[in-house]
Image (cartoon, rainbow, N blue to C red; front, top):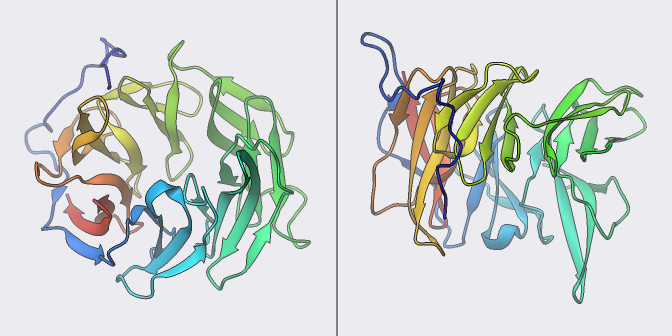
Length: 310
C-alpha cells in the first residue's frame, strides 16, 4: 500500500498546463508490439531506437525484439537477468546482473550480452552483488554501492579511464553519485529518512528522477538543487529532450495491483497530464522511445506502443 507522506509544500503540483502552452497527449490508440502468449514485461528501448529489450514473469531471462515487433529472440535464460538490466549507449549490448542457484544459495555475476549472441561475464560469481549495472560509456560498466564504485572494461581495448565521469545510482543509503575515475562515491539524501527507488538520470545526465517509497515522484538537478515534487508516480522514464517525465500510477488492494495508467509531468512541475484512463487495462512500466514519439509499456504480459505528441 502506498501513502502520500512526502510532500513539498512550497512546490505545489499544477495539474493542467498554462493556457496556450503545448502539452503532451496520446496521439492515437496503443499499437500491439508483442503478443506471443508469454508474460512479457519491462520493455526498454535501445538508445538507437532499433530494438526493445524485455523480460518475463519473475524477471527470469532477457529477450530483445525489433522496434516493429519482429524477430523476438532470447539473449539469456538466467534467473534475475531481467531485473535492472541496462542498454549500452550505442545500443549493441546489454549489461545484466545474472543469478545462479545452488539450493537456497544464490550467486550473482555481472554479465554483458551482445545482440549477436555473445555472452561475457565481467565478474566472477559472488555470494552478494547488491549493485545493478550502470554503463560508463560504451566500453565500461560500473557497479555502485554506498561505499565504492567498481568499473569493468569490456575488453582489452577499453581505455583505462571511462568515458563517463559520474554515474548516478540508487544505493541503500539513498542516491549515489560515483566518480568512475577516482572511485569516490557521494551519497545524497534529498529527503532525509526517505527510501529512494528507481533513480533515473535524464538523457543529458544533469537531472535525476526518483521515487520515494510510500510517497511521490521527484526530479532534481544532479547537485541536489531544484528539487521538484511531481506528485504520485512510479517507474519514471525521460523524454529524449529532458522536458517531460512519464510514469505509471497504480492502485492496489494491499496485496496486488488493481489498476494502472500512464501519465506524464513537466520536469519543472508546471503541468501533469493523464495519457491513459482505462479501468480494464493495466498499463505499466513505460519506456520513452528515443525519437520521442511513443511509450512502450506492458499490459498483462503483452507489449504495446502508445503514440504521444505535443
